[in-house]
Length: 560
Image (cartoon, rainbow, N blue to C red; front, side):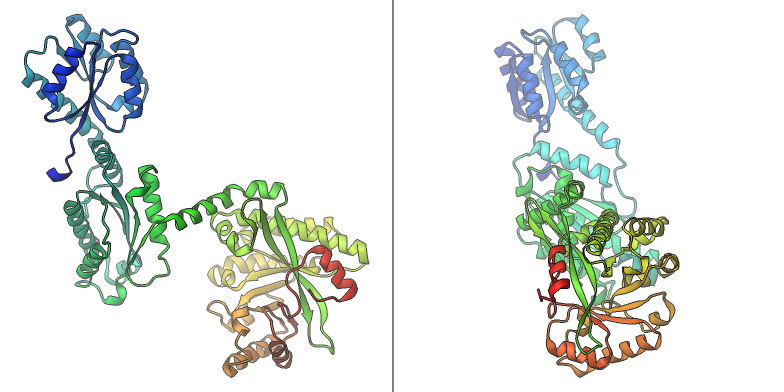
């Protein structure tokens, strides 16, 4: 690292005699920042508040209030303070052995008549302490020449300690699609790409007074002085990569957490930079994103959402609403079933729609607990309606791919339907098209068991992904649910309407019931009816409504 970033170390001088403190300060102040303490109590307070800055302690042993031995004992018990070397100051030879046994790095005898010896011992003790910390980590990544992640954080903390007031930016750099480069061109070529990026990072670090590391296979950290123009380093990396890759293969993302967030720990700042970097997942070029208060709020909300889940279940903050489905093939539309949809009445964020929390639960497995909550609520509500009217309205519930990996899912669903007196065929299960496609063998086996137990399966979101009509011939389903994106243009685009006609025709041939969601206009309804769609749902008929509104709907047919 160049001299511009080799910030002055801080030395704490502890002695109850002012003349001794001033003498040592005069000897060392040319090379070090000096702070003073006149007794052991004050010394410990300084160590606690400035532990990240202090590089060495010069400690007198004989002092009032708290003596040097007590300070040494306190330092030894604190794992972080124990990393700071202590040189004891004494005129008693017998004290030297005891202090060394208690963890002192060295000793200086009074009077201080050889300044050059003091300077040499201070410098050597600091170097030995820093080297011992650094050597504990494997210093360099063999492939790129960058620091390893462990060493990087150790050295970055030293930079912070030496110059705590300098604004430093935490930067994450990631090359998306790197695994495909390895597959297309081989690992040797992939290594060359990584070395090219690393070379630019090293140069940037040297220019800006910082350090860089390789934190995973294709990701890098850079810690450097605050930089306002991030286009320049990004363009430099992209330019050098263009000598190896086609323009369409270069996707460099950079996330920045600026120095103003230095109140966070170093690890947290890089987590923030990574969050900003990941916000560019759908960006297919090269770009950077700066972590800001909006991202901070989003991150806070996501953390709150996950942290508040258990309490939300316990206090029944999740509210299950029901959207009516109508059979439209008769003279008049007839209520045929309901879809259970969940919202969250959060005490701070208010009523939250499913898309604001379900994706988070899907990522960490909480979706399985939420699904079971909804299933139980829906089954109990079906029982109440049956008790009120003597008849059952079928209800469809969502089943996540995580649920389908649970070998006990069939037993659980049979238990809650039996407990509430509901025939399994009236408790409809919606499974997304993407679940079938991504893990077809696992999902198919699970679905077959559910169908054998009497449950009806609806393929949800058909048309939202890479739909194939071949799925209708090969997968075990009882109903096909056309995604809203599939039908939204049928009233103004003949090709969209013809495509819907084809899908509905194939579904009829395989005796698969058809459902269209997101129907909002009379024109869409008429076209779907003409094309042979059996069931529709959407705002044209009703929004999702409360259980009480469902009761009114069943009695009066009122439109909500």
